[in-house]
Length: 314
Image 1 (cartoon, rainbow, N blue to C red):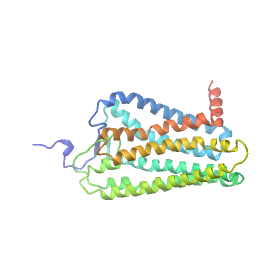
Image 2: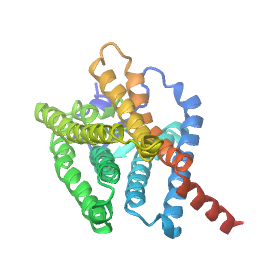
Image 3: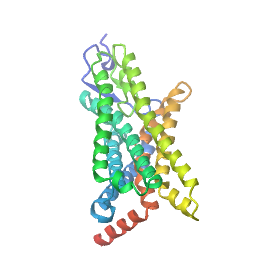
Image 4: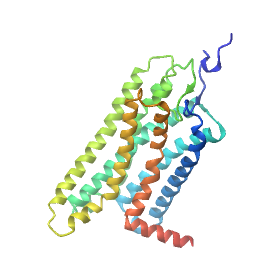
């Protein structure tokens, strides 16, 4: 008897993504909210980038860092969500070997790039509040350029071995990925080889990159809070904290969703696989949709810039 195609002994040249293997009927009613969130994320981030580009008053280091965050959000969204929607709408489940590992690289490198950007933004707020007189000489355009290069190179180099280690495994059996995305462990489980090294490397690098960023963010806000509590002028503390309120909210969104994804994966035996898959998809969609909205609503200069942009369009 011939073996089914999913269990062929021939080398695998493509994978099949199966979203929600136990509840595939979810795809129909999930496609609409995911589409709306995707359009919101793309539209809001594009509007923010155009506003910062055209409004001269926003050509400041803090807004350049926010632009970098928006670019990272858009790339992450475009890497994951269009393929998910193609599966939902047109049943286009196949993904080539190279495209799968490219998606894996972007997901594994851009996520710590975002946390690293949050860390640099926290340092920006620390200098602005704790050393306001030295702020113009420390947080310069050159500083932002160097920080951006560091963010990209550090995370790209340390994350690159994850897809490389996974790609060098032998795939001679099942080619069905029970996920909407090419997550490292979901793909590695299909290989004929031992993938312990992949699992250990991803764990160590992931926690090292994200952990170090969040420790530095925590330290920055600890020093900020200590400095603010020493302010004696009436209303000075509230004004100082309001300048980093948007940044703190974004970090809270990012870390909360990341924590939920991590905890559910740790308790994967108790949590249905379909819930884990949905959380992984939403983690690449909700922060990009919320980040520009939070800054747009809470930052006076950005709101004014968007109004000017709209008036130009009219």
